[in-house]
Image 1 (cartoon, rainbow, N blue to C red):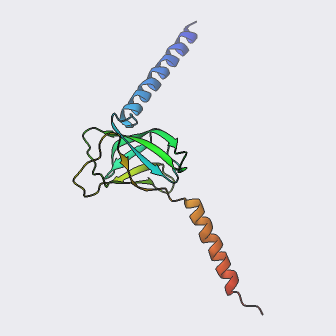
Image 2: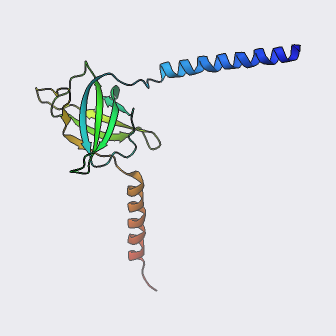
Length: 156
């Protein structure tokens, strides 16, 4: 019976430590949704963007993606972004979907413009750039290089 008690206590300790690790990871990971005002932005493509994707300004998280939709007239993807209330963005701000690295995730990078008037809650970011598809670029490079090498080959 003593062996079962020791095993039970060790199992309980493991569960408590695992719970503490999860609480620590959640509190330091900065994965909380941002509460603030909402803006929309339309993109031709939103590959890699999901609900909760970070919105960054100068590399600092200032918002997150809270909704995705398809515009039935233009067939563009419409993202709804929640931006922290203290961050005021000029009306000519641009948004670009970019990646954190070759194997990293994607995020929305905001570049503020120079206009004096600010975007109001519910406003739209009009200047957007969709993500670059690295697989397509790599395929074009490989096939264009192969065609160029085949065209330069001289028959004997």
